[in-house]
Image (cartoon, each protein chain N blue to C red):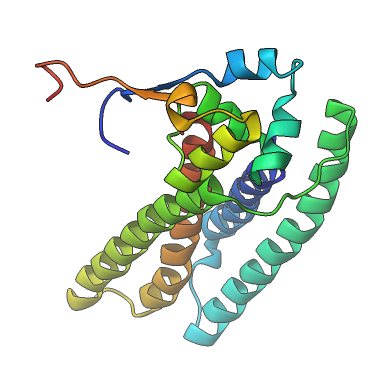
Length: 142
Length: 78
């Protein structure tokens, strides 16, 4: 496993962890509230993802280094890394754009405007998830 | 890279063997790419840029055609 693949894996775990927390919170009535309350909660979720990625990367690098018996270090990106990143970003951009556009439909139908706050959060998170999944896929197939 | 099965083959594994069992890591360092990229090229999963292809040939001291070969697509692939 390379450092870049490990980072993509950590990013996916972060989405699962924070998404799980938000889902659990929503099931317990946390999805309602004023726009400011919802936005504050999602800001904490963004902070949680950043923190998870930082500590997850450090811990993941240590664990993978122990498992592989050699220090896991990030290498300078080469042309294949750039090609993988470009394809993954393309997939991510498409997913983010579609989700953001689709979020306008329920808003146009008069659904609670708080949905827009969730869309602001979910669309880029899904985009990031697609990016991480695409990287893991392309690193194994090209 | 085109779609479908790649038509570019290579002799990198053989050339590494004849170069004193040169490691993938050593070749990667000479060429200036990661070892994973050399692995992907050697397995035919990734077709390198022309510049990297020339660098690989230079690392072995052979012409490009001794490293990479292109097989014209069959009628069903054209």
